[in-house]
Length: 362
Ligand code: NAD
Image (tube, rainbow, N blue to C red):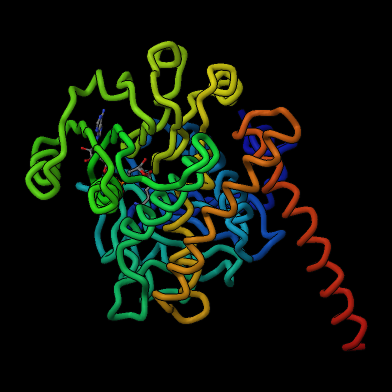
């Protein structure tokens, strides 16, 4: 498929192919929407099998960022970048700086951050070539690792889910099955343990598993059992696509609320969860804490302000649940409509403001 065939009809604004012979950089930057502000989203460094696969991924991810930012109430749009290659083999200072120079040429229409395959230190390197980067280390005025903040947002979101499902937001005594205790899952486990929840965890990484067990005294389950447990909340914090044709009939939870991106294998699985009476916290709403955190850097980072804003995830989910219940649609569909509605309303105001400034200046 040609690039235009890929992007036609979905409102993409700009796709930039970046190539640097000397460093071997091959990257694609996709700006889905700047209707609410500059496209903000991380740089994924991944050994894609083909350019087409990389293009499909960056387009899908940049569109997801538009919805995530809009639902979180931020004044940024959706963008994302991918660098093609195995980060363990080809990532180096020269390549990252070449990439930073491409980001700089976009003049702030795209602002980058870390993602799968890139780190805080990588963002510090990119920053040497461009101002348009967030998620740098504290030394550079950045906000540091976003994972604990994402976990805090998921924890707040879980409370909103409990209120909706049981009429009581208290986590004490509630059972939670936590899939994945990596950066986000571990921090979430800490909040849950402190709140008195009964947590069961599973992870492919035995070190991560052991660390959570010894620090929080939680139970463990096998990898293929964790999503089948009869619990109040199933929290996917590892992989996408956990709600799929096979797993649907095995779920015994009342709520799905976790950090993983793209939890539904297909959009219609949101409707299936509704039919099953399982309350689903749409992933891009509940896991927006990391994005809210890096967005705060654009105003000069203030941890307290960022955390306060992350607490808003509780209210945002309540809005989504209210739309779903009023319109008798899935929460996944309601979240999308909630985001689209905000883009429509706020971009109209921004457009009016630009026109007024334009008139005033002449
Ligand atoms: P991570 O790599 O630190 O942790 C993932 C954990 O899941 C690891 O411990 C890994 O061993 C485990 N895992 C992998 N496959 C598994 C399986 N089949 N079963 C059980 N465990 C498995 O990643 P993270 O930063 O904690 O992110 C977790 C998820 O949240 C990802 O989907 C990520 O895209 C999403 N997310 C993260 C952030 C953030 O701030 N880090 C923000 C938004 C969304």
